Length: 374
Image (cartoon, rainbow, N blue to C red; front, side):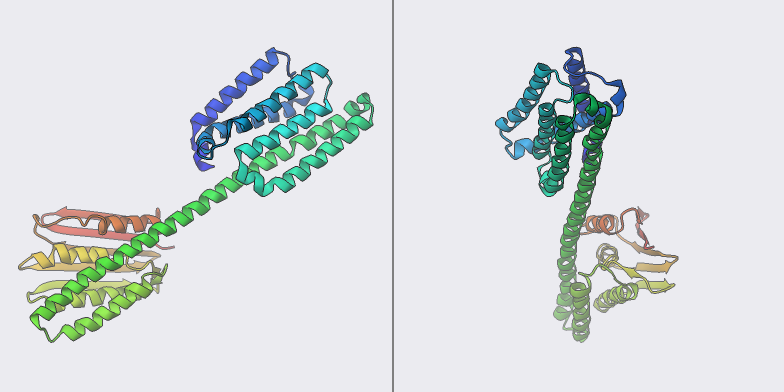
């Protein structure tokens, strides 16, 4: 329904058509404005407007679902027959006309909002069946004078009162459907993004291990052990919605230690962290920024390489910052998996609750990620 409300064109066209139809019927004396039933007239006008606007907005639905022409023609036929009977008999509150009007709205509901109608058809049919039965009883069982004197207003209310209730219920169903659809879509996108992080990490860490085996390093067993711990964390903890922040810190420390073992050069790597209390966070939120710092900085610099990392968690905020130097000609963005993946995950998990700043200046790369987790 949110998309419908945003579609001002359908609403405007619906209003225009409703005004034109009402004007034609008034000038043709096919309907009369009853000053004593102004609320009834307003409700009928709004109902016409709503039905026509929804029909215009959902025209693609009719085409997609191949709603055949004869059904639309049948609906128009009901309108024509109703008007014809009402004009021919010229009887106030003609029972046949009232029955045809109710039939028209039921058929229109079936055509325009079939899913909603099928779900609530039983209460709708019971309500209007009971109202019609009561109307026929008082309209045919009493003299016309007594009907208009004692029952007219009550019957009108019984016909009109359910309309705004049904419309409100329809709007609620549309809102609920859109909300559930968004939740399912977000979960599917998040699962896809998480599945991209795992092979990305494995590819990089296996490259590290390959380098050590080529060198026949005595530290290879230690690397295998740490890699095993990190893989276990990535596979089992990575699929959870939230993990303790301390576990995420241990994961980052293991990743840093793996790289320290590889390097034969002096690298200034500092990781400072301060946690006010035990927080929980979506897993694997910082690893991409750390990977980029190593890949585009330390691994390509021959000397004076550094990575300074700070993580502060307090007052329901987590602030992760990382600074590293790099060779300007070597910096590049990791398409499809790197920062774009991180940004999409942040938008899904922490919408309007995060701030990510990236700055490249004087061969220095700065990344700042701030999360509100209240």
